[in-house]
Image 1 (tube, rainbow, N blue to C red):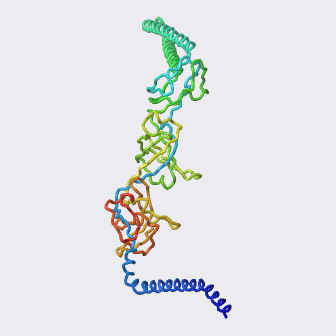
Image 2 (cartoon, rainbow, N blue to C red):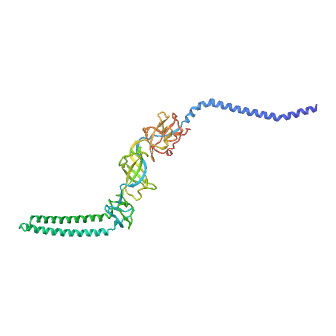
Image 3 (tube, rainbow, N blue to C red):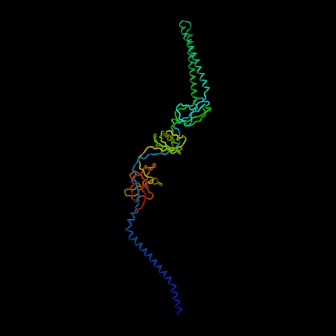
Length: 402
């Protein structure tokens, strides 16, 4: 008996830890069930009354702008090469010869008719002297012939000489006078030849290049010796697309900036190309620019051409959205719902983006975060005080209330 009683007591003591673990598990499961039941009761009873307040708090607040309409300049950007407006190639006009002196350098300003280079003329000078002497000989012969004619006329009335002799004396006098005129013409021709030996400026302007040196032998086939810009005027041959070219006209104001330069120069269009290149679909707008040392023919420059102005709404760039259908903006209607409005944008400038089509300027346009909105969505619009103000200044954002 004692042996059996001791064995039973040992088994009960071994089951005690298992019983405690089972009771702990029951308490944990019971607590979780109570928490679950409490949560269900909270959301089914109290949540219904709080739903309207939570829904209202999730209406996004957006900043909008009423752009109105303002003057927008139509600006066309183009690039091209600089050139002299009227370039004058200067070459050999006369018979040429050895250059005895070059009197100008590239970059010099010259007057009309000013000598640019001289050609050696010792032979021509001697020929000029010979012709001048021949005039004196012819004049002496003419005076002698005239004296003989005068004496013959005095004798013919007395019958000492015949009328035929008088006619012969008259013809001799006329021939002598003609020889004087021929000698004078030959002298004038020689003087002109000597004058054509000088290489002269055809008009006032700026010497661009010089391609002749002292001692060089030049002929009429020597080509261009100097290149000049008439009056020093320059131009930009701006390459403009076919559509933009149609909007340009003579007199439009332009700003020209040479490549690599920081300074810009005012100019105006003086000629618009009447033809379009069939390969590039472009034409030239020729922009007249007053002379400046930084404007070098052959260099490249960019042009900003202002071709009139128009009335259009101006929006910050952040208000413009784009997708595969094109550009659009979001506006807020009278019911505070978001609507999509397709637009056609124009020039982009520091003032913003001009809208050519799609807006009247009286709409409430969402300035920023349009990508987070959907058409038909309710919003709370907040009007931006200054139209065109940047989104950073206005604190533009979409955020829930509360």
